[in-house]
Length: 409
Image 1 (cartoon, rainbow, N blue to C red):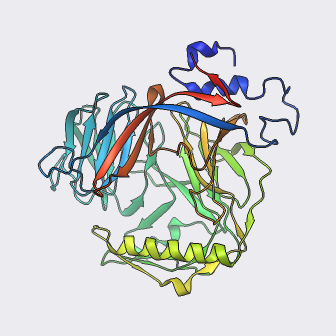
Image 2: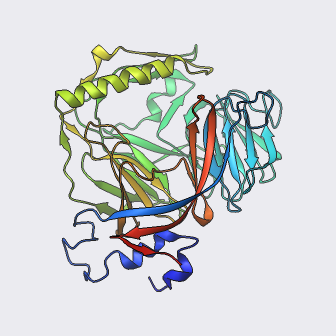
Image 3: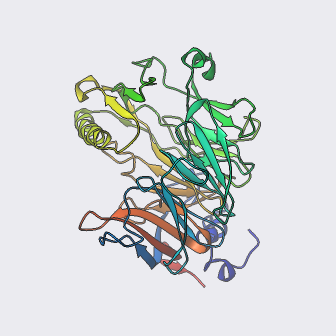
């Protein structure tokens, strides 16, 4: 990377490690600071920017259910409250700029919205039960697209096509056509111009699945879920600015880069072995299953959720290494590893680049992957305070330390 670190660190501190992570090592296999070597721990320095979320019932930031947050390129934060059915746009100083949407059936209003996708220019794609509403960057309603399917999506390509790994047709006779005949997990690209969805990529799935009908939605809007098999390799992906997907679907440490034509354009790997599933890991997973089931039962939604009991839960033989994959504002990939008890977000987080450079690792008890990345090092977290009030906290990543040497401007 031909750049002066003192010029980069204030706005993109982690980019510095692309230049310094292999310093003095020559990129040799097994050298410290490479994908093949041991973890190089990062020590981030952050500063608080603002926190919104009020216990006062008539304040604008009294949230019902914060489903997602996102930044635009100006650094404004967009908070989707699915219970209030609106999006709050918050400026860099934590003040309310405007409100988008609101409960209702008319143009510009939300009805049972499931997700709100925010583009970098601040425009919106809001998914409802069988419709998609589009808004311009100022929050003005543009048009509504009627869909004949239930989409479970939280992201879109730069060209506006939705990316969805869960895609349920409203017409039972056509549901089979929405899934590929070959074994695997399809990722669909869904245009909003009336043309048919297409399968971008079919992710790998562990053979001999225990339940072919693990998920179903009937005409009464009841979602029926089987207990399934714990520690199935997850399907985690996020979108890079060029439209490629950074995707993990394996038991081992393997992140694939999927091009717009569905081809694998690159792979990022580390030699980290999966854990064998033992009784302690199984019991920890059973407890997480019980907690997740209780949360589903308390979920306020237009859908009714029915899930099998924990006694029906099966287990794979190994715990997959990767628990999540997220792409930050500068296209670095944050790879969260599972914890020692199999918890999805209980392990450390590696930060790597799409071209396979290893930046470093954040400790499991340190800085966590945020709910949203923004420009200039902004990070947003959805939390609850000591009174169990929903809040959104924004911090800035100012600088980091590597091996006890501070690297900042």
